[in-house]
Image (cartoon, rainbow, N blue to C red; front, side):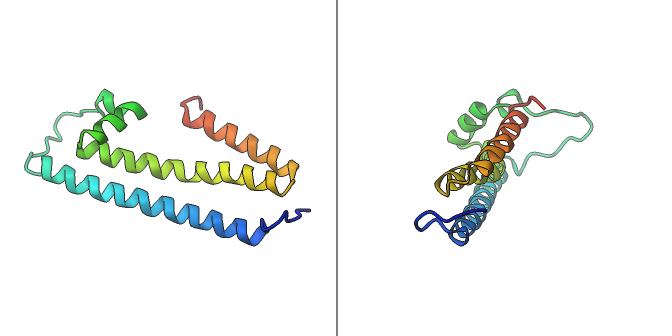
Length: 128
């Protein structure tokens, strides 16, 4: 059974988690939208050639490459950064949950959430 520690009630934690998820989705959507405008401004006039398959460039396959492209003002990099933020949102929720359960001294849930966090980290690192 969970007990509240100080002002860390279940209701407050649920409110914070809801705000975290909502904010993460809104920020990522805004970044993707900005990236779409930049991309269309830079490459909107280029005619698409669907006769040849071209995979993602190598710089779009790593977080470092995506960040570099986004900082350089490349539309595709900004869009990819927004998608990374979207992926990071539930990851941040799990990290916050570990913290919240620890503050509430609910160590069974701390361990279970750490297992979930390890599985997420393993999956996101390409191990799964």
